[in-house]
Image 1 (cartoon, rainbow, N blue to C red):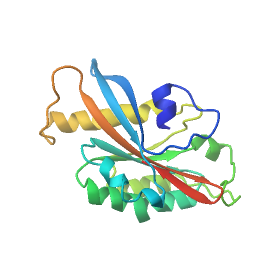
Image 2 (cartoon, helix red, strand yellow):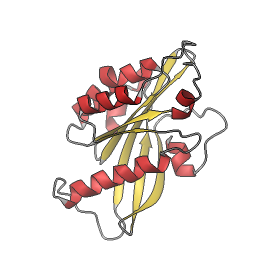
Image 3 (tube, rainbow, N blue to C red):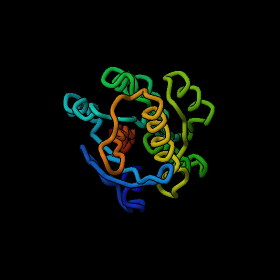
Length: 194
């Protein structure tokens, strides 16, 4: 998702990421905003390193696959508690990925079953964890891809404007750190990228 947004195209092959960083720029209220996008490893081997990426985050995107029930469950069981522990007061957006696969009724690659996560179930979880928004996206066809980052910037800038965040950006364009945790499942293994 971050690669597709930052580079403007969906990769043809699976690209494993371990603590990758990207930058992207968008306009918000006639101002350019530079986004620092952090995509870090979710494998158990990186559990001790991952928290180093949280400080300074302006917003966290908690992402799960809409066609992988285990990915959805991991948000509540592992990823939200971890994010809440390290960056308690940072806003989150819950993101359901692969909406194109759900609409095409393609089975979960790990189980071979088709038990998609509904929009209603995603919204319920977003409410439960206190996420600012729930957005469904397809990095492959671009559905809502720009919307996620526009919403993220709007949420952060509104918080900065109302004084919820005492930091003021330096002269020049505002810069935001966006941390995204994307859960992926491949061959019955779950690879989570933050």
